[in-house]
Image (cartoon, rainbow, N blue to C red; front, side):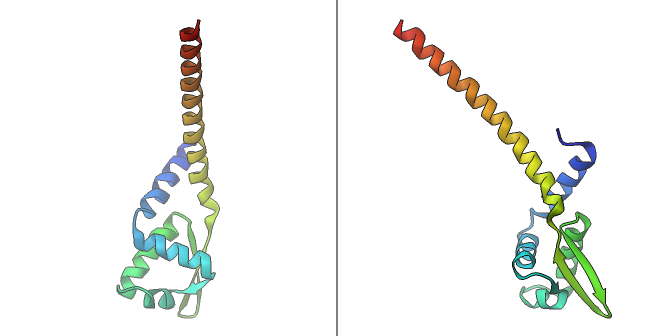
Length: 116
């Protein structure tokens, strides 16, 4: 079962991933490795300030980390918290598998009763 703190983090991660720009930013950082904020901003048709706000949301839920070297901010993916989402999906999958197994057994039982 997902713990309370994990529940909060799960909500934060799912909220952050609801925005297509944030999903795109995270995907790009995962694919390319550490990136400068200014380089990321140049790839989108929005302001540097808007990109910075999106990155802060990703940073808040721990999906990226930011390091600063002078005036340069480097963004790097940190997917450790994705395990929380994977655990939740695993729980959902097991619930549905149990339901499907029960449903299959019910159908099989029904078919056997018809054949008698």
